[in-house]
Structure formats: structure tokens, C-alpha cells
Length: 631
Image 1 (cartoon, rainbow, N blue to C red):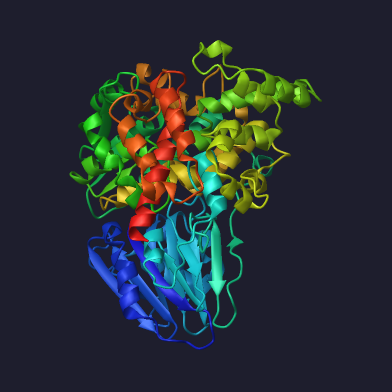
Image 2: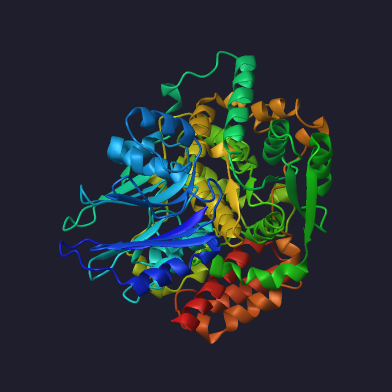
């Protein structure tokens, strides 16, 4: 795993890149690659790289070149099928000097050009310059596991970096915030691709590539892979065949993700996905697997006992660390990791478990992606019930909208009486219902928080506009949900959290469930093999029954989070209050501090649970404070 940064002159002048700027941009990513640093500069091009050495420790130094030096690449990630690609390319006449997957990229480009990325199985972000063809090439992996940001400066230089901090160091970069990104953040708790919090910068979306030539301007990125429509793929004939196919496919991707020349372990939460990965790793490896678990003093969030059962059963070496309120001050460091507001509170325990893992290994395998691929989220079942009710009562949406507007919020009431959100969701169409279900701040609350200045600056923009292109109306409802999640929630929140938290410690995290061929297969499975009898990931759980103690498999899903509700009524409330009373936050003028403080008072008085919203607002305040202090 690595960090990359650089500059490309989009004019036809081939101006020399500023070496000091390139070094500063690259140096800001040292945490992503503490082992080595490398640069390539020539007229019109500057490439920088920070390396976390994992495969071919001596030979995989970057930037890496083809035989005559006309093609050069910097790369972040892993190409898991690099050995078979190396065989194919050797047969085509290419000569390899290293055992590195990076060298496969330059030769694949020579043979297949822009389509080379369609042959890669792995996680990657890359920048490549071909001097002969005068082409500059950026690309990102199909699911967006690895990040890539870019911006076109007013002076014609295209700059790029693994993290936003690499862009903001350039003196010509504008730090003007994007109101659309802020609105999306206040709704979802993250900034979805292709937006960034800065108006001048973009995220290259997952499965996209960008080709730029001198004097040719910067075109829009093009998509090179889409998850197949389930009807385009032939699912297994029956459940038994599907179970056997899952066994073989999952074992294969877990095995392929274990290629490494450095110590390797896994995350083990005690849940279904991480337990499956741990068990399959343990079967493959002669030496015991190193497994790492985060624990919590609050039993509602603690899964250490379940993780310990899996660890004992699989014979792995188990490391456990507890997250406590004493770790809360470290949460303030998170804004420096993400470079933009990011509201997933599980980033704190993820950051801690990455620190724990790095004490023992350099690479870990994670269970992320299993919920999206195999239908595991509890909210899927709730949404499907709502969608079924909409379809059985055609023309009822106006009535549900009316009832949702009339019914009181009742935050402190017993759960069966809190119907407002469900009624409002039933009043929406499919993507509108999805958006309501994923929103941290309901529209009524959002209206009280945003200032008139923010509302005016949006100029009619709606967060729904970012989701609609990813909806697939002709598909089965569960497939529609999964596809929306893959394109938005997974890429913009889950994978961002894991990437930044792990890279902060120089740890590589691999995600077997997100091998894009496996994802295509999983999405094509009939919904009845994913959700069955009120339980999600049914097919995976049947496989897991063969691998771990059965009591681990069939139990309520806890998720991976911290006891926010209680901490915000205790040790955290004053930190949030101080942040929203600061002058630095007040002067930004887009969020009403008084409305935030009133929301905090309601939460502290137990008049409702606003913990997720308040955490999101605290992260925003910390980001704004940092902006002002660094501005």
C-alpha cells in the first residue's frame, strides 16, 4: 500500500514541474508509505511516490518503468492476479526485471492501453505517463477501495494525490468549500464521489479512468466496469450448488489476497464476515494467523467473547484492545486523517484496531463488503418491507406523506410509537426512501441547522441528484439497494474509513469480499438466498456453520461502533459544546451554532437520541476550526 502524488501540464508548453512542490505533496503522504520515497520528473510531468513495501521488497521500488523508460507508473494497491498476467505478458514478448505487481501495469499498458485496467483483479489507484503516445493516465479500481483525488489549477496544471492533503499543499489550489459537498455531508455523514469538500477538487469515482494529453484539456472520466445486471448472469441451479460455489469462490479470493512478503493477519470482530475470512485464512496457512479485535466496556457493543470463540476454534493468535472514553481526545485527530468532514464514529475504533494490528503485522484481511455483496444489513429488510407496502398500495404515497407530516416525532417514546420516519419514507419513491433511510439528519432538522446563506448557495442542488444515477429501476428491490450501496455508502464511507485509518499506521488492509468478480457473482444471487426467514447473508451463514461454532453464526448483528449516546451525555458533551461556541466555527456562516447547541441540550436531557447527528456536527466543527487555523 502506498501514497502517490504528482503534476501534469495540460497545456502544450511542457513546462518543468516544480520539484519542491512535488516533494511537499508527496511528503504529506509519508504515513501511507513509510518505507521508501521516489520521484520522476521531466518536461510537463512530475510523479511522486511513498512506498509501503509488501511484495518484492527490493525490486518493487517506484516510480517503475518499462524496458526503455518511455512508460512510467506510480501505483497504490495490489494486483492479485499479477502472476497470471505476468505469464500472459511474457508470452507476448515482455521482459520482467522484478517480481512486483507494479511492473505488470506498465507492460499491460503497452499491450492493451487504456483497457489494461479491465484485466486487473485487485485494489488500485495509479498514475501513468507514456512519453511516446503523449498520454497521461489516471485510474481507480472497480469498487473504489483505493482513493485518488485530482484538481485542475487555473494555471493549467493537473494535480493529483491519494489524499486531499496532497492537493491542498499546492499554493495555487483554492480552498473554497463546495456548498453541495457540505449539504451532502450534513445529510449522509460523508461527501460522496465525485465531490470533495473543496469546490476545486474531485474524487476519481470507482471503476473510472481519465486520459489527458498535452493541450487537450481535461475530459470527464469514463467508466470501465459496472456490476452486471443480475439477469445477465446465470445463478447456480439450486441452493446446494450456490453453497458449493460460495465455498470455492470465497476460498479462492481469500487465498489470492494472502500473497505477501511481509507478516499478514486479519481483523476479527466476531461477526459473520470477519469470522469467515479468519476461518478460511486459518485453513490456508501453516503458521497461526494473527487476529486483532476491538472491545468495549459497554456490553451492547462488545463482541470480544464471540471473537475469542472463533479464535480458539480456528487456532489463531488473538490480540484484544478495549476502546474507552479515555480514547475520546484521539477522535479530534480524525479530521486530519480524512481531510474533509467524516461522520462515521466507528472510525475511532477502526483507527485503534489498525494501530493494534500494526504492532504485529503489516497486512491484514478484513470482512468489509460482505454486507453489501451478500445482503447483510438489517436496514435492507426494513426497506424491503416498506417497498412491498408501497407496491401493494399503489397511489398511497401522498397519503403517507400527509400522515408523516402530521404524526409527531416522539423521539423519547417507545420504539413502536416512533412511526414518523417510516411514514415519511413510505411517502417517497424508491431512491427517495433509500435517501431517507441513509440520512443522518432528517430534512426537518437539516432545515433548522443550515443558514439561509447555505440554502441560497446550493442553487437548487439536492443530495438525491448524487444517488439517482446509480439507481436501477428495472431490477429486483434488493439488487437496487445493493447497487446503490456499492456506488455510494461503500465507496464514500466504509472504504474511506478503512483506508485512512489503516494508512495512518502504515498498515495495508485487503478486502476479499470486494474482489469485483466475486461481487458480480454475489449480486446475481436470488434475493431468497441472501435474506431468508428474517436473517441476512443466509447463504454465507450456512457456509459459516461449517467453519466456526454455531452460536457465533446465528445471533443479532451488533455492528462496529462506540456508545455514542451515553458519551455525548457524559464526557463528550462539553467538547461538542466548546467546538460550536468557537468563533472560528461561527464565522464560516453555513450552519447555525445555536441550533446545534439546542440539539445537544435535547440529547443531554434525554428528550431524544441525536447521537449520530451530534457526532457528525462535532466532526464538521473540528474540520471548520482546522480550516480557519490553517487558512
